[in-house]
Amino acid sequence: MAKRILVDFDSMSYACPYSTSSCEYNCGCYHPDADEAKLDSESGKLIGRCWNSGCPVVCVFDEEDLDNPDLDWDGTERADVCGVDGKFIDDDEYATLCCDDTASPDEKMLLYHYQRYMHRYDPEWLMTHKREEFE
Image 1 (cartoon, rainbow, N blue to C red):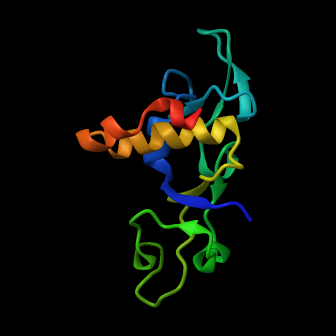
Image 2: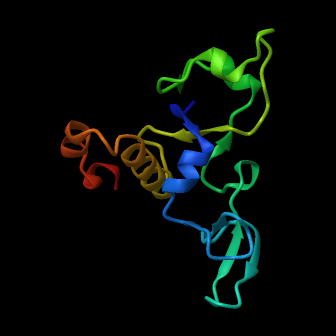
């Protein structure tokens, strides 16, 4: 099984190079496989909806992922995705993204942009992680 990393979907979509807010959707997606794509009258491009369950690059984080040994929680705690009763909260707040050498070019690019966004105030991380290593 491929190694995956847990990502905050809102932060990931904000950092995603396919994301746009200049369309009828609150958050649109220029990815060629975007869900519910429509022709945008202003740009003349197909723009789909950017949402967790329709993203062509990430996978929805679900209850089965809680015990996945190949999941990198990336600082998120189990308590962040479970209620006080310990049961999984399915709110589409998180997604998973492939982060090993089996990742597709889209996954590598999105992972780079997501991590760059999450570490944007960390000069050491920015200096040691060059874009080339994700291409």
